[in-house]
Length: 311
Image (tube, rainbow, N blue to C red; front, side, top):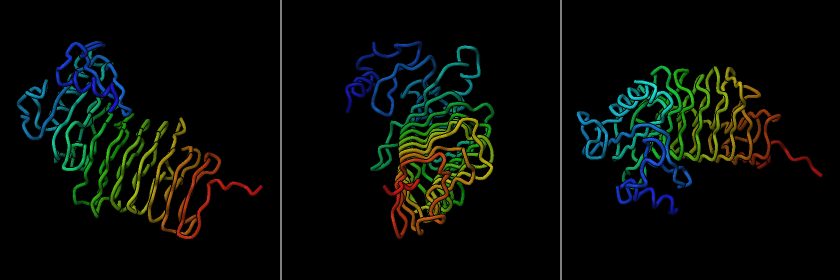
């Protein structure tokens, strides 16, 4: 554990209260590398499915909300209330084993940080299908959260044009036998999926992009395994005003580990991929103009894509 993380934990528990609120009114936070960050002006909310109550105001652990939805409602109201909220970033801490909620709204301009645990998992779980439809939903970041699929044939997260700049950092996406997709993104630009784990045999893919803008999307450093039908699918109608990046992922699936049906949308760089299909068009479709250094294995041979020419 880094020194910054230790200091952050002390500050969060009130051992060193003078370290809170270094900038504006926001508390300290910690990034994916364990480095301490003084957050921008904003409010902080707390949620516990074990001892919280939605009649609380969510302002501390002693006054925690019961449901994530209650915290999202409160956070979005504070962001929209006046000029002090318009450029702020709020924080929602969630602690508990498994929240059973379908999130129909994401917290606007907010970090949702998992600080609880679920059995042997060091992340609090949310079981549900999440389809945010709140207008003007910008820049939600989920950090250290376990997204668990219910037993139905649907994606875990479905993003549309109402959402922009959604990020998943060090999260887990856990499929059941019928889960179709981990993340379905349609016309939802600036998406970031970083250092996440996708586990279970997704029926369709780990991530699928639909028709519309996917500009500046980054899919970096993820583990995608357990034999999904497809890996990352970029639909023929996907567009990008700013080319995205698929880099440094481990992708294992039954069919195409990367299927770029739309060209010029993503750079595909340095991924390690395994397909149960023979190496070739059955195992990948990659725009080679924007690819470099991908190590791939089919059920027959291994290669580097683009192919390194013989000397």
